[in-house]
Image (cartoon, rainbow, N blue to C red; front, side, top):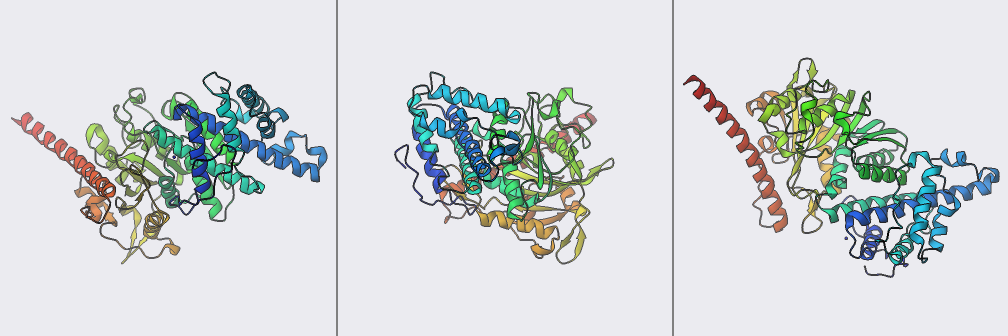
Length: 535
């Protein structure tokens, strides 16, 4: 997840990340760092390594700014306000990376790192309670810590300030992903695969405005949103970041991840979570990106039966999927759009009022407009936490602006776009798949063309991949939103495909069939109960 001396710079072998990037440096660095952890669990070692990468980042940024001030304005070199004005953290002398590196071979290095973290938190209010401070514990080998410091010292050597920040940010993000893979299901709780986030960002295009994630994990949605703005001639600061996270450890990872990227954000933490203690109650976001935990049954819905957020129906106590959807819609501005990852069952379940809520989200109810804009079926094996395929919901509060450009102009409020992306992606290893840059562009292009955006070209239905279906047709399918029902079933019996890809496609089809079976079973039970009542 290469062998080399711990104090040597990793080699420059290039590896594609599927999104047009070069991950040779980060991949080799992670392999070397992973080798150093020995028998330590990835879930524990994650905080050791990421904390040190963060420490190097803020120290490098501080030293670069200090050198600039000494050259241009010597009196300001010891003024903390000069640093905070450029979003640079103040790093006291005893906490600077150069000091720790010089003492990396000392038996007391763990204690020195803890003291550095404590000192930095005292001098920077926004980092209070964020940094890991248990490097001196007996279970951590001092020799390993010293070797890890030497290894991390190779990051961004010889780079200019801006380039160094980008390299450190990429390294932090890559390490997050690799640790998520090492932790399996638990890792998926704090990390959404980058290519999935990229699809969502390219679809809703958060150029400028307020971006919100009510279950933000380690902040990957925000990082990709900032990247999108920068790639499209925007700048950091064009978007305002808001988030909430109920897991304190994950909240700390998010705060560090954003700080490494130089992203200023309002990220709230409380153990009760977004449903029961909505820290951003009055926020109306222009964009929402979210990957809520799937099918949560113990979300405390029995205590929220009369909540103002449930415009489309009271969510079932035993499943939080439609509570998340309605929470997100509640926080959208009048022209806001959202991308949400949900379990496939959300597209077809009729149990415990879910079918009625889905119908309301499609058609509108009691003055609340229909908000479902586009559905995307994803292949299996994209996520660290589950092999079961999931889907993307794209929601828009105002669907009246923009017309479908095809054989004739039509009001988008009467149609929903369905995209079946189950055959896209490539295997990065024996268990996991990613979307390529071309895959992401294909999905996003279809959506933007359907929305009638002038630079996206004309929209055309593409059998097996995408189709625009009207509400009357969706009604005949009992408001089931599974894309395969509308675009036409893709041929998954392709012997030219590797076994892993054929198996993933078959698994996706099986999940659709299970979902359809659930719908039919519920219908039959309903009919039988009617016969029994009349008998």
